[in-house]
Image (cartoon, rainbow over all chains, first blue to last red):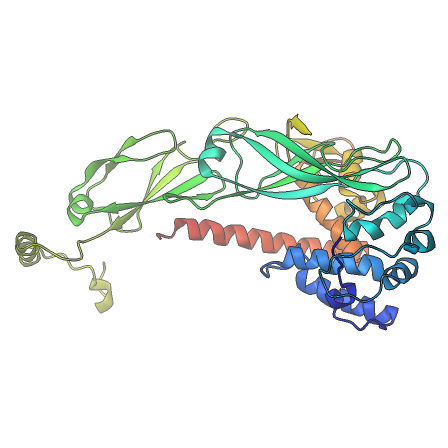
Length: 310
Length: 103
């Protein structure tokens, strides 16, 4: 297994007092707790900090940790031969440590002394799906490593694939619960749950907010001024949209019920947002046409600059 | 090992009982009721006993993590949950406005 330097994770000396360890944990928890922090990598960092604190705040676990000696972070090692019997108690005597994570080594201290049923651990897993999958529904296949306890309370990580059908209608931030698909319970305790935190992948065309979708709709100046009937891509296939004459940039044209479906029926809307675009370079013929238009038009879009009604 | 399973949507279409909320959140019944009475956890109105939208499961689980990780009491939890709710509302509003903006 790979050694983890818990003192370094908390930024304290090996001889730090219990109070110094607690203060360091609190400072880092406020900075990296995933429920309150938006820092990149905060969740992984908090996991390290919490794992270190869970061991170092407990005098018995800290003594067992210290007995492993000081090693470089990430160094492959095995606990000394007498470590298990001196610090682990009966729950560790048969352990080979071959498939034990460093974190699990200390999490066993609670389990081995436990009497009776203990519920399995809940897990939350972030899952990113495409807007197309949210529209149609999808079958997710999740490869997880779930803890299981044997009769002695010894924990092993067991690879597990969970296939979950997500019906149409998931939105960004949707939470789903898979009862009993978390960690296994101990001695008849109920199995933990698996929670999925759904987010939608960015899409080349659509931006989702709730069940509504937004689509940029580039228009030529003549299409915007004169109106047009255009083919618009939707998740269910192309539809024709009538662009009213006199459409300005930013106008939202609503296609009712063409957004993401809702789980209990109905659907959000698709909004096509008009964007008037002009060619970066003009042909001679186009330039002449625009010049004739400019000379022949009395349209003044900046009247309000002079205090006149627009 | 491969397991195929159905999922429960934690949304406003599904209701959960107080007992289910205790089981899924890790908070005790007294703590949950204190959070309800402080306005940090909304219970469904017009229903006998305490019943909640399944969306509350996520909020209650967050409360449990904050209690354990920051050693907060229920009053501290109530303030934290209300502030997190405001942050969430503002983030949703920003996301909606960003979606309306052209790329």
